[in-house]
Image (tube, rainbow, N blue to C red; front, side, top):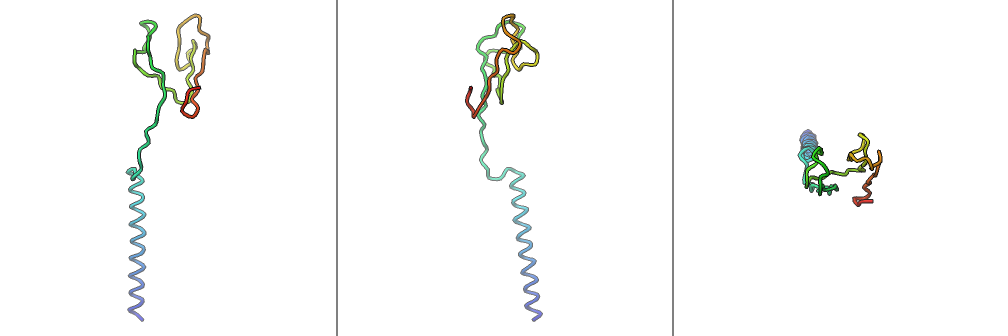
Amino acid sequence: MPLVRLILRVLIIVVIYIIIFWALRIMYKDIKGGNRKKRVSKQLGLEVIKVGDNKSNLKIGSVIPIHSKLTIGRKEDNLLILHDQYVSGYHAVIYIKIMSIL
């Protein structure tokens, strides 16, 4: 009878150590990124083709990223500010919906 108790105790300890080992392994993989494939997010943007004046900080070939929406106009709170007297304060808004341009 004492031998059976000893075997059961050792078996319980071994099972507990196995559970702890698997939990630590899962946490380690989660911290290090695991075996997950890295998603390549397709980021949409507007490419600068022509720069209007020398005062602009845009360069030809640079890309203006669009995350959810891009506001265009003369006012300072727009993402893309146009310094032109014929452009309204809030001229246009470009929205992204399901990774396509509306």
